[in-house]
Image (cartoon, rainbow over all chains, first blue to last red; front, side, top):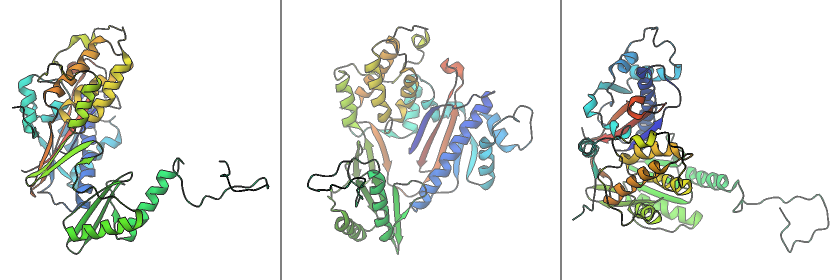
Length: 130
Length: 256
């Protein structure tokens, strides 16, 4: 695990899909930065980055270039996701909500789910209690 | 600025010409950075476009990365000889002190083994606990209660704001190696202006969670087969009872 962030959204969204789309835009910027960094460090990655998003409608906004009544107000800077996706910076993939490890950073979870995500993200303890 | 003692001058309207920057000047940090970068450029390093404090050099089969934190410099590379040459030239220019293998870099404790690198903030975590007199507190298994109505009950009675702020401020830095307390800390940090007793208890719960495993950190295994996986999620107000939802992303670089 190399980078994470929990952030209160800067702007108000008119729909939850839009909010999710904005989160995608923020993630997109981070991926771009990471690929610059890896390029400078001469690290080769195995294939294109994958970006997982559990919201179908947000993925659809990214794929669909149409001018739609409900999405026409979305700020132009968010559409960077669409641009970068077409340039092939990353693949946008679906994930089920139960397997979304980023939930660890947006809600307080019960013990079972909390531990499930912890192990999924590779958190380890070098001095486990005896 | 006053004229230094020992320099006699009876002329007025004179100014001092600064030959080199001094500590305490607000330009000092920029001067140091300029000096260091021009030196690094002279030994064929280039500045990474991903970060101003990262410098890289790639010459026939050897690669060296150099990370600068004010006057602490971290060197990594694949050729021990080349690294020694760089260290030698840095020493000639700035008189450096070689601290050997990396163990401590701004507050992060780093352990290197044949299998990979482990990063944790054990010392810092224990300092926070000692500071909040929580060293003998009972540990918990999660950093936050799942549904805590008390945080939103409209109670406006402010409770020990100074200590609360202090705890939150220190926890914010602990998030560097503990992504799983990120949400709890971010959430509680929204109340530093009006913390109530319930918020204070929630902050203490995070401390009790840290108490359970102060050495917990992140492990980066040694492998070459990497792929970037990013997860993005946004949570609505129903889950938080708060006006603006937080958004979030996790990046993992892992073996597919």
